[in-house]
Length: 177
Image 1: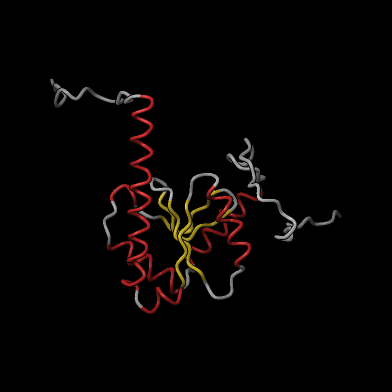
Image 2: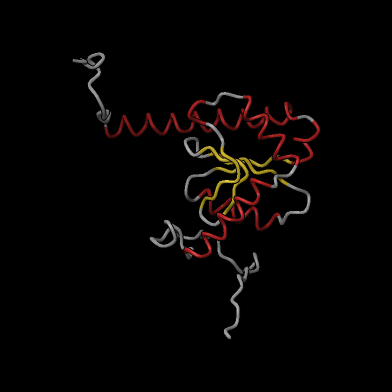
């Protein structure tokens, strides 16, 4: 019988400021397929057994029409399970529960920032007290992220020129015979 391997976390004081590099292993991250499957299973469990704060915020997000900037619950990005994430915006909403490890959360936020995902934290107590009040900074973060993406797009287009659009020509509707 072999010894079971467990994940060993390094002490935050020992770690350097560099973030992990993306590798071509484990769907783009340096994670084994087995570990990634376990993370996806954990995310599925969290979706089924959500906390009251998650349920409240999910119900509030369901009322809004964000278009292509919609938020999905308990999404896996790398080795992190994000509470709510909008991939087109590159914005994640993390609900801070009272019993969580802040140093681990900061390290995870830093590694997500290295791949273009900004994490916005909201205390669970704020959501449960008044969800409308909790939505105001979330909307502000969404607007700021949208403006940042627009600015980056304009700079790219001015530097490299506009790229041609794919798909059908813009001359009008297709000729149906």
